[in-house]
Length: 364
Image 1 (tube, rainbow, N blue to C red):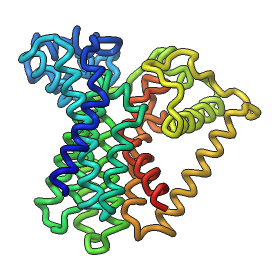
Image 2 (image 1 turned 180 degrees about the vertical axis):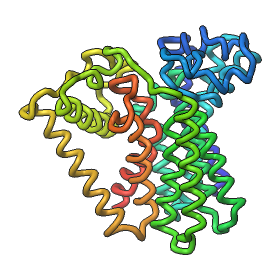
Image 3 (image 1 turned 90 degrees about the vertical axis):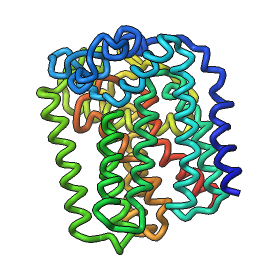
């Protein structure tokens, strides 16, 4: 049965996104691919280790510090073989989305001990969610697709029954590959460790925690050392970050989290580019949008209580909450400034958890 289910789940995303394969290079595709010397082969492969996603020296003050060499390697190989024909770039994105969607079924059955029917529902929900349109149809969304597949495979590897250094090292290596695809990959090792500590009592040992913590610390220090300085963004990229009022920044940042969550629930207003005044700042406590922020905080609190107090026996619930919340944090502006107001492609990984929550709710 499994041999039949996996191919079907792999084919569904291809059918769904086949109409995007004739699309051209647009928007961020131009600087990231068409005009990027690292993609076109004008620079050596060693240059990939010191350039950002747009081909700028990552230590240059103009750089956005988006270090994604593995993603650039896939673009460069495609350019070397097929040139700048967008159909091949779109085709690769669609295949990666198919891999992610089908792999969710494998995780559901093998790692989360879910019913096969629920695994199929989860995979199909994820395959069809409209919020993935930008990540799959937009070529630069390749970073999110690669990051997602490496995070999922790393999670699966981390849950192996053996607790050997080899199995731990394998999951950490995959975390590094996720990080080299996109910055949110750094949350992979936190997800793996937290899930194991909550659900696998046999692996709650000091060695496991120490190795993973050391690897995470090394990742953080390596990225900070590579950056040399923090990125700077102009006002139109992220107006809230340039706002002097702390209360305005915090209220806006929390609301943006609520706005993203609403987009997952009801993707009725999608856009490839949220900039400038597309989402006005929240400057007063009386702004009605603060009610959405309060609702979001209550939901997060409820989920935290559920995962740590009431439902630790259900690995699917723990997995869903961890994947919903943790991968979104690097893009929340709460820790580091980012160069956008809202970007639907950053929801590609968190929606793994969201679609699983919907699946669990449907079952109940």
